[in-house]
Length: 339
Image (cartoon, rainbow, N blue to C red):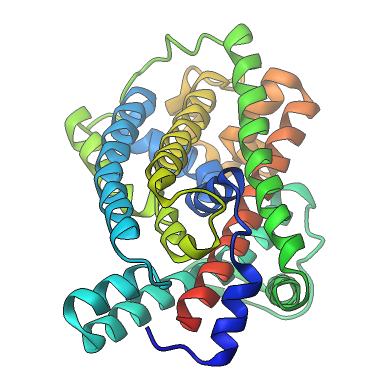
């Protein structure tokens, strides 16, 4: 690949900066986002139920591992920086590589403001109406406030400045964010295992009129969305402190732990139903009438298991998920476009 002197200098500065842990944090941080804490109540449980979600995530993870192995194969065969762009260029030439890079780059870039806006959305549940000031308008029934727009833009700008002046800090922050997700969800799950009957959640599958097979299939079709981001690792092979041959282990860990987080949050949401509801289905039907953390089954579960500490742990995990997505896709976008 042709590179100018600036690209060469950048590679020399960043080379060998990723340990196995930080490489895993990069991939895993891109896989898990704010949706993993919201979608158990909005999508996973209504569509497939707790058992169906577990099955769908297992199947989806298996499918993603096939793709992950292909990335691992190409990472070992092609030593150039650029991930899928470099692979497409080597196999099909520059025209195909150009199209590949821009489609992939736009998908990465689009996820940066999406994650930033998720922070504003979190404020609605945990900071009441702190950011709901200034002009506002409605899009598809959704209220958008100037304060939330301003906050989201400032987050994007802040991380842009961090990447310009503090790449080392950003790398460590990504690792902290990934560990916060695993730690927060893991502690609540372990506590819930002792207090909740996670093994006997009824009904096991989705809403009435939604067959188990159809619900599971629908969630399997979401697998590319649920696990998007592990492929960012292919852009950083020049930065590994370890052999590229170990990359499949790291990709596998990112995908499997991601599937475990999705499944754990869904089962907790189904098991920790407020006492006034007969089961999780009745609770899910009533979510639109609830406000604050009670409207998010995953956070309701954290509070049911460990009180305010449980809710705080999951809030920290959700914050880690959002920040991990911003950092990971910012990082991947810049690396892809520089290639």
